[in-house]
Image (cartoon, one colour):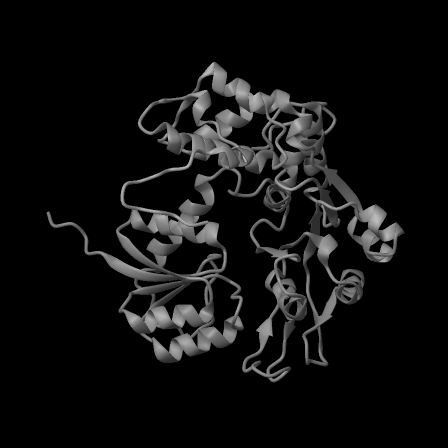
Length: 399
């Protein structure tokens, strides 16, 4: 029997981890996947090579989604369109020959990782309330009281629409907690959208958050929705909220208070239903007392606080964390020698759990084909200064 023919699809999403997971799932179903992180790149991919389908996220960073769909239908009427969130596109799309198969792949992607799968109905959350027993969260690894308290607070507030402020040092897992809050909420079937307020230039941050109207400024040739509208019905994480400029803080405060926003260059107010989560490594209470962060916005965002401890405060969880990251690397699982484990315990971990994950990944590579990671393979960032100079015959290196 001949193998099934290999088909091609364009996967358009700005969420790189999501693209990676869907690409792996479709590859196992004999799909060749071309990736695009925006609408313009997706249209270029579609024009550059024949394909059977487009898998489209519900938000694009460069184009307004409805206008993109209109251009797509006009230019590629024979290509199937499947929305990544499972909902149907507007009427008028050509018959979708591969829709059921692609939706099956998307469902498999959403359910294979317990940290990102399914809903946790309110009745399930009620089971543990009053029992004194905290059910484990796959996102929060560890049995230290500080970690258990963080998990307890996640479970308490997940079913509400209350704004949550997640505080913790860099690398402690603030976005992981935010995704857990979304997963356990009644909004889990709607979008989860994240915006890093420190990663986008101030001149672009307003349109990134609120969107803009066509002709709002030079180069605004199409209307574009912002992250707030993209998260309608779901959850928006404002990461590194302490870096948000004061001018934008006032505009965000108005949205938090009334649920309405105005796109840049547009006089019409748009009502949006979104739950706001904020995350920061900075002391917002102190910044607001010093006038460097709006106190009224701080109190609106910090209705419920979740504090994540640095790794140095729960070193008792080291074995559990190592086991967790080893299991993530299936089938490339390694065991740790006692000396390697002791080296991990002796480190101060300024980069916290994220640093631990990277150290273990590096150690796995350095160990090569051996199944046991030795102490020599445990390298930290500061060790790079003491690496020996490599002198290869016939080659010279200049610093």
